[in-house]
Figure 1 (tube, one colour):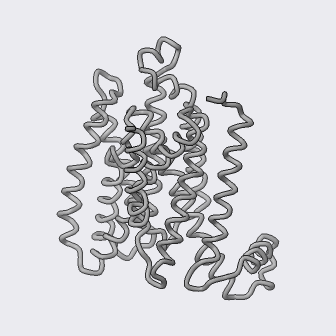
Figure 2 (figure 1 turned 90 degrees about the vertical axis):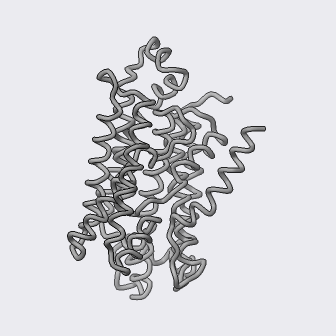
Length: 337
């Protein structure tokens, strides 16, 4: 394996950012109202220069009012889920771990349903309640996962699975109390929805940068922990501190993503696996490339979801599951050979 250098990390990330830029341009172009690439470039340049009078009203509405905020939300959600997936897989030392394995998505969904029942017409209440539900679940699972005053990996995983099962049962019970319209809207949201980015994207990007940065600070320690916790301790790694940082940061990223988009599956499970196959298991490269790869996957999936049967939209989670399940089966079979 080639030695990992800062130059190699920068080159790989730059190549993926180039792919992301191409996907963003394609996403801006496609839709019920198609726009040529030349018009997109002119519109973006005039918008960056604040020359709003030079932009046709329909272009301004479609590009800046509809598609660009949706793409930005997709980038945040994809990067958050894939980075959280890489973090949980390292924390639990389980290649099948994903951002939802510890029940965070169930907690967010429960908070969203309670908001829909209690405050159905309050702007931003659903996202705030979903995030609060995710944070409460994170806290509960953390304390349930402690054994002997320390965070135990096996106990944490078991606590997450039990919590997820319990919350899922409560969700099913509460969904029977929703009206037909609210039930359909909640079901669509639970499968992933980027159609209404009503939150401040600047705060989302700030939280994303903080969460990814916190996990990245533990990259070298995670490489050592993969060899075994005792071995890592002998090499000077504060294993409990690393576990705490990764758990909190990955859970925060998951709660952030689920609260604004619902549960979009396979992103946090599939992307880290693909990255490992392409560039190895070193977390100094795995974490940033997973973030960019997740952004690419969600933006591409959302583009297909809103164009494949336009003007009708499909849930983003349905698209990632349809594409992700066969790919993951292929990767699994390839590794077994």
